[in-house]
Image 1 (cartoon, rainbow, N blue to C red):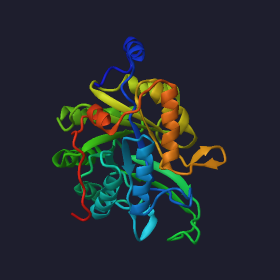
Image 2 (cartoon, rainbow, N blue to C red):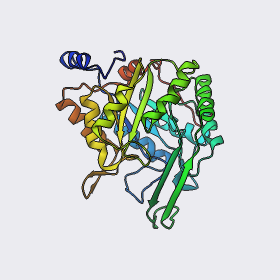
Image 3 (cartoon, one colour):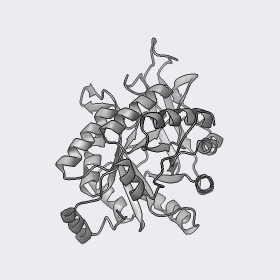
Image 4 (spheres, one colour):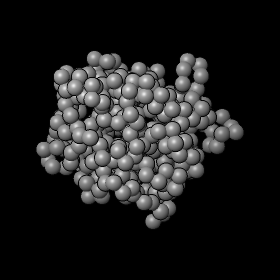
Length: 321
């Protein structure tokens, strides 16, 4: 199980004949922007997040990506390391070997200090935005009896990630033994990853997550996925994530191309037109079913750890330790 040149036609054909590496399925459980006002199945409390993680794990996910929620405002995210540790500890109870991946992206109310401080919870992996994150979107009204109701909200903002901030977060991750998952919105952000590699701040395999169909990201098209893969640095592994209606075609494409995928209610709340997901487990179950029809084995957490260059022994977490 090694990183390979995904853009090499002959190597792709050879690996297709011999079998691609097992497929790593990441489940992004909840996100930092929308809550139960968008889909009642989105988990918000620590217990709900842990229960959905176990559902995804039992369905075949070997990694979960988590946004802890603000207990005083459940529709919003928090990067408080104590809350993140609580969530991680609960997940570990039900998922003894799953890879725990926490956000440093957070949400619209997250401060840059929060992004650095959350790493004190020491997740095994953490997302690392590779450039400014500009977006404009509307969140619908959150009505009682949901906790912490609010009127409809409109955001028009930019999270100002710079070379220096990204380098600082990467240094902090290296210091704490956290593997960065580099979140790529377009190919120009390879300049940033190359800067980190040349500075010796990243260890191979380098892990990239292509987030497509998100505002100011690349359009979610097959040719754009292929363009990103063509420029992938050596010794890299990549995941494909599609937002909303683009999730299913892009993750299917990622399976076919020999990469790995991300599904879950953070990225898409609909199973099909007019029908919402009943939970994160259903999203993983569909990905597993498609992968097996395409002759892709599903990675166990142990296999995923090997592919991603993580230590074999899962991290342990204690609440508020």
